[in-house]
Length: 138
Image (cartoon, rainbow, N blue to C red):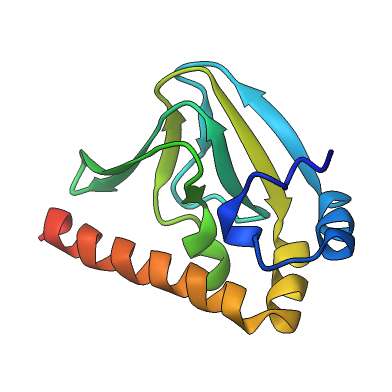
């Protein structure tokens, strides 16, 4: 079984494409309160949360602002790859023990070149988060 089969976002991919992408993915387990990435880290991967809950926060004027909580089957880390193009805009901390699918940035970038619909789906997620963040930051 492919570790990507359950991910709805990737449902348009055929088995060969999923198998090719899987070569550049790994399942990662993190414990509660582990930091997945820090604000301003360079982005090397996008994540899909398989199990658990993760909190996304940003420091604004020395205050920690909670932007959102990531739940199962949601993306995280996508904004640094597709919107900011390099650095993390926020930090991600596991609220519970979690299982993540780590997708290396170069592999997801290659995949969206072949599947513009996948990129459109990711863009919608990013746009929703940008709007939501603006409401929380302002």
